[in-house]
Length: 325
Length: 289
Image (cartoon, rainbow over all chains, first blue to last red; front, side, top):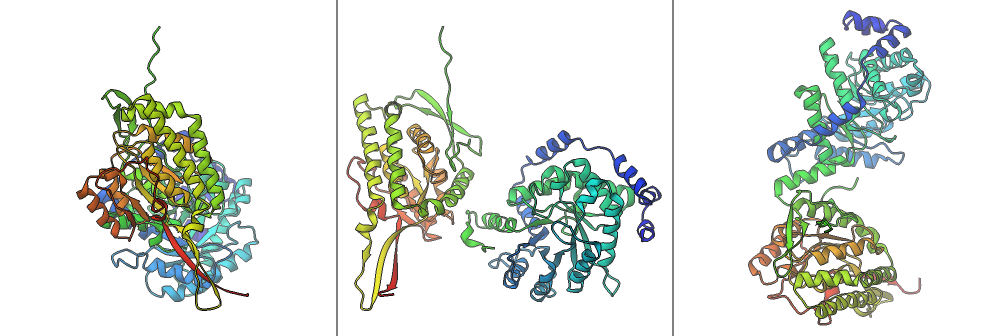
């Protein structure tokens, strides 16, 4: 299992995953995060002023990056259908308004989303592996994943076992990610994209966020994602900054790009633009694309649409003019 | 030893808090004789936007309160103002250049006006509502409901009595308000905001922006989430008033048109001061069920 993973990595990274001890040695050997520095840098980048045409561009880009999410116990097929319709045409009054990147639902609703989305190009992301807690036996998690992929999910959002991670059983987390990655495979040889959720609100320190990022990338994650949205604090700018640094360093070491997805707590256009500035400054402009950066959000889209309308019409719009989700 | 001056820069009142203007701008406020009194924040369009968001957020809770409770709260505003009479008298004297005696009469009138409107809170329904006779076995009831978020351009001359006379009738029926104070005479409005903040009025029900009606007015008039606008503050400027009315037509705002000149605010207000910003809702209900 690890052999296939290791074959695409340079020697020293491949060695890191050979045993629990070497993995721990590698992760604990990563440089520590300067907490004050990271927070100050994130705050400073948040003060950049993005106006007029740049703002219009940023808003459209942010809309294209949204994973429109509904993850409630009360989700119904009807709600998922309306959400999927909204993802395809966020602003029905304006054909130029781009579609969102994906809709994100529970696995049992993937089929419903698929019916509505068809071949519109909007991806279907499903949360799997006993989301949001991740507290289930591995075969159940794998069955959960395979089920979602079979139902037509293009992307799988898995949660890591935070209990194992915090106890220091890194190899267990690693192997689980590898196993889920394999469960993402489809019969035709393609594979669903795997996003690995850390639930950074439970990881306590930025050092742990950095370790989790490297761990997930070593295990073959296509995306690393901050949070489930069920735990506070969810995505924050400094946490995302640490993760963006990790994917930047990973590309330097391996030549491979990994995506980043902050999720939860991003509600306003202003917040979204702060993230985009940070992506550009930390990871680089290559990441300013829905393939490599996503927002996990539900209410953010409405605010983006209101701001977009304001830019186009020159007058402020209001919540009466967007859907109630 | 001479005391060092405490130089004041007053802030805006939005959502129950006192933020600085988002633009960072402020302007000098002088008394009627042209002497510097204090600095006031110069509200920008973004402050207006924030104020509308705050007002919209507060609307559900405020309109959902019982009329009786709104009466209590508006009366409470009058009580707190009464406690701070000397401050208001000074502010009105400075702003409007009145004698002490006349300024006191203005403050008295403003407080009395609040008490008067507080009394109306749970009586307006009886006066303008009705049980309509209909040709069928139904109760048919018409009742006034608040219009929503009301933008108020407050009078330019009468900085306190005028202000109270346009704000009180809006909120007493359950609307929430975004108020642009008199530009030259903003300080009584700032003091009034401090009273509101300490008199059980939920944050966001009244938001007070100090600044120029000609710059903020158009943004409020065209704002799609504002349901009505009172143009008292642009009295006498027919061209601007027309522009604002045109902008307001986009989402069919209720508009109280600007008078040709500022009226005498001492006169007892007409009922339309309140009914201009209510909607009549009529419900049918079967009799005997």
